[in-house]
Each structure stands twice: as structure tokens, then as C-alpha cells.
Length: 242
Image (cartoon, rainbow, N blue to C red):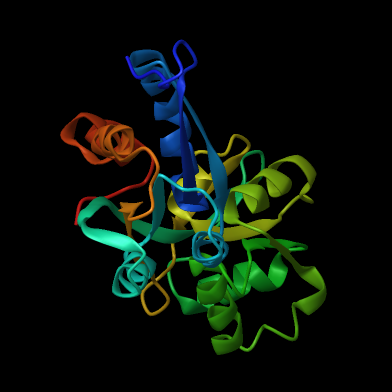
């Protein structure tokens, strides 16, 4: 068990995580806290926001971001290149409310039709989240960005967007975010990954900052998160192997 130097109080582990990994991290936190007699706390959100928090000096023992952002922070000297582990690849997908009829988005024409017919469209931050930035480009490419402007419902991250769609969305509402955020949200169902020509696959990784305060404990959690033991959980949650 891991205890603080002062005695019986459990050690604290702080993290910053992309919303795409929220379901996976949440599933592992409880067992890890019991095994290690520690306490984990942290923030989930758009990758750009989590990157900014680290750069601004927020306490962080491990961070989960897209590989692109991990590489940028490593080059910037904030992350240890020897302390980075891949979580897997996540596709960006289309979602519907679980109670609504199924729809088809197998090609660009079908996707445009489904979006055009949706009374509301839920998606993550179009400036700081991987899926939100990509989805904004899709709307522009389909010529729907201005047409659907009044129906767009952006939220800070995909998990929040999917929760809002499940609990407040109108009948026929459509969402777009990382598949992991869709699969882990009760009340929404995955329609399909984005069709050819619009697909997006994002590699996510966990890393330990050079300024981590509890490096050894962070290593053990990252190992549990990315090791072979979590492969079934990752696979069920939408993480594919590279």
C-alpha cells in the first residue's frame, strides 16, 4: 500500500485526461485506490484544455492526451519521453439517442442527409477538442455549417455532449464525438464511425510529466491503464490496438 510520509493518510495522485479516456480511467480508479491505498483526482476535458492546464502549472502526476499533443509537450520539455505509453486508437463516430430509430451514415450523402434532418446536433468543443475540430471541418466540407448553425449544440467535451443529448436531446438528435465517449454514455447508441473520406482515427497515450510529484505511483497506474490486463476493457470501450 502507498501511504503519505506523514503516516496513515493515503497518497494523492493527480491527473489530467482527454474526455475520450474518461470511461476507461473511471473504471480503473476504484480498484487501483483500494489496491494502493491512495486517492486519485483529476480533470477530464478537451485535449487542448488539458494541455493548457499542464502548461499553466496545474499539479499533474500523469496526463492522457492524443499522441500528437503528447509529442508536442515532450518536445517542449514538459514530459519524459521514457514515460509514455500508448492506450490505443479511437475512431470518431456518429451517435443517436438510444430510444430513437436507427439511421445510416455509410457515405457522405447519407451523413449529410442525417445531419440535415436532425433537429439538434451535439458535439464537443470545436476549438480545443480533437473530435470537435474535425466535425466542424466536416460540416464546412458538406456545406452545412451555416445552414445548421442554429441546431448546433457544442459542449466542453464529448462526454458532456453525449450526456446532454441523452438527457435533454430532442427526438432525432444526432451527435458526433469519439467512439469511446459514445460507448460509455448511457442513453446514447453508436450509429457508426464516420464514413470514408471523413473518418478520423486518433491515437491516445498516457505520459508522466517531469514535474510529477508521485512518479512511482503514477507509473503503476499508467501500467494498469495501458498494460495487457486492461486490453479487454479498452477494446469494449472503443480503443483499438495500433
